Length: 284
Image: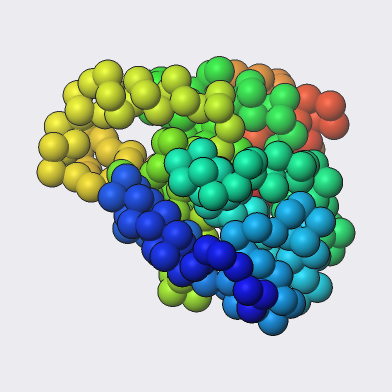
């Protein structure tokens, strides 16, 4: 690693202690892993970790893409590094400003939002456009706040039904607008991010008594609960979406083919094409 008047490990450890004291354990593990990988890269490339500028850091993200890292991983690394450099600039005064002041996330949007191949795959399973999601969210059944939050969170983060119901309160980081999602197949975690538009719904659900009003909430570690169970079943998510979409059904006489052969409740409306989409095909 290039020589520097600063010892990077001590400042990294200070930053990580701060993260650990303020965030869920999995967030701390993610930040630690991200910074460890970046430090190893700087050592190989001869880059001064503390005093690196934007032009020295940008190649790291291209390196991650070339190595085949998922877009969600690249996004997580970007966020971890930007927080670290904000810390050593604002709290430690080691550098005048964060190099991320000169790194626009939009410049790496293709890397962080998915490669062309990933986008094509995502297009194949994205059946509900934003305007229909808006319609579903506006027409959910009671409890309306919880169910609207479920629909909007699924759309914004891309999590699946089983992943959504497994979210624990400790997995949520509202300061970073991030959620740690456990992937059972790989037995690993990934981080997803949601938009500021969810802040009010989350505040009302968690802080203003909506979640606590459910009978099972006091003994539940999960974000989404009901009066009957401390954790929603993933089948319940399908029902919430189905009932939200029921506000714009076409007349039964308009249903053709597949809609006649299978139960109507298995489908959502598509006003533009007058077709039905199976609930099980929806991915937000």
